[in-house]
Image (cartoon, rainbow over the protein chains, first blue to last red):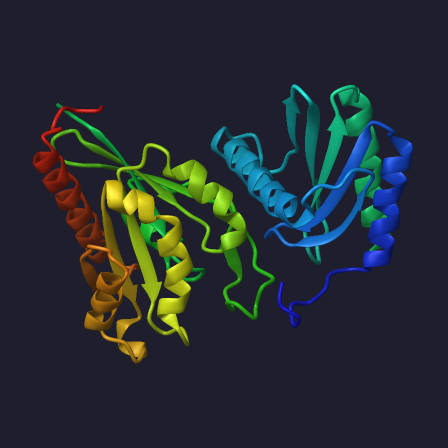
Length: 131
Length: 186
């Protein structure tokens, strides 16, 4: 990202919301917040992940998910969950009017999907409340 | 026998890939645009972050499946995924940029394999607004070992985009004839 690209929101507050998510859900090991055009905004991690790369991937996949929903006449907003053999990746929309964001949560395969969703939604709400 | 062609539209940010697909697709394309925040790179409001998808039915039953790529290299994973099974790439350039060949360079390199194995055409947009002429693009491509026809186009015009597609399909067919692989893949 170039220097004159506006930085969105308050990174400190975003990072505290991400850290809280990791504390809430021990099975989650990394969380990245990205702009919908793929730039990393903030991250918190117990285990290192390529955050800038994940930010771009997350924005693409959420946009493709939304495109699929639109094609099916099921609105244009949703979440994406990828369950791998060795872990889960959850992508949630953060519908901020000023700058929509994507939350990407990386968790172990032992994370219960319902708990992962709940904790991630709490985090999204916290980010929205901070604005 | 009817056949399907998977074709890609690639090129730097703002070159007109989304517009080109919208200009020829039979129905409204599937788009994955997000708000563009990288104003330093390009001033447009929206940018493709997944891919565009459009379809064109040709006379005789053949079909085109068109995939528009994101222009920024941070989305290069999409380039790789979409390249699988593609039969050609339409590379778009924006001649009004300060250094259009530098912009083009990263994109061309990523699709070199596809271009070499199948086909590539180059469409230069806003041709009247820059310092470079069509010949400059041709020489630059040749110097890098690419064999690709270059056209000056306005991607908002359906006929211009169809010209690029025609040139690409001709190139695909010629190569297949030369290779003796004319059987249908449809």
